[in-house]
Image 1 (cartoon, rainbow, N blue to C red):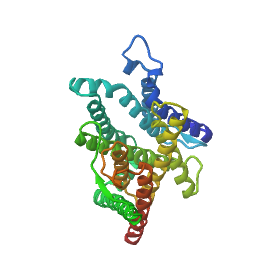
Image 2: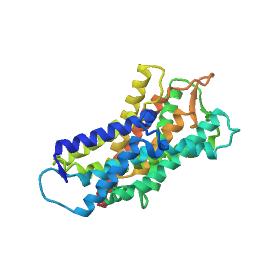
Image 3: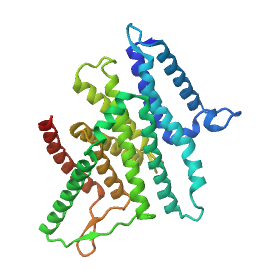
Image 4: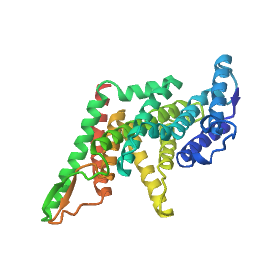
Length: 336
């Protein structure tokens, strides 16, 4: 079955918009009163329908004609909806099953984040089976020496930002001290959990989804490589921003959360496109999470050890990351 290109764009846009909203509003999904919520929800019915479409398209095989095969869209749609169905239906019951009841509120939050991070990494491994080209895209940007070079580049960028901030403080006569992490809950759990979340989100958004969109966009009518990259990057970054819209105190706080996540997703996506290294983006992502949660060392200035807002440190570190990306890109170009 083939559909017009405009309809294919509409299906992708609706699926990404729906997936972005489901993180916060899955409870509003219509559910059958006669079945368990996980398998009685409309979301699960959509997944079953997509699997049936994929099986039928595989049976029919390629068919010439105008538009785009519906079966070409099913891997991306399944990547979007299956992850949301698993995370929204099973993470909380699993957490209630394995988490000790003696945990404090801060420890419980840290452990739940750890569970979510591990779950997302596992889901990426499962979802990569839906599209061989997207799985190859991820392997090319995560295998070999990519972990070593990516993490080293991130450490260099963060370290350079710290050195510049400390030098600037000393230049203006301030007494600079290193502040210990002050995270809520176990520091080790926060580190491992946020690292897993960062790696999972980068391989999911800037790995599977970005790679699959780059595969689809030529079929959807985008011929210029630059247009394909920017459209795929914009769509994944917008969804990333929507998913980070949490319960906020008001409209302004919610808008700031979306804008920050949208900008961060765009910058991390550019890092992946420039360096072909998912570990670099994941390491920078994890460090930003550490910083925002108080799990990273900071710099204090003056006798009262006043610290700069996290945004200033993040901005300077991201500048350093793009400088490092420039050198990595040159090295990759020479090797190629």
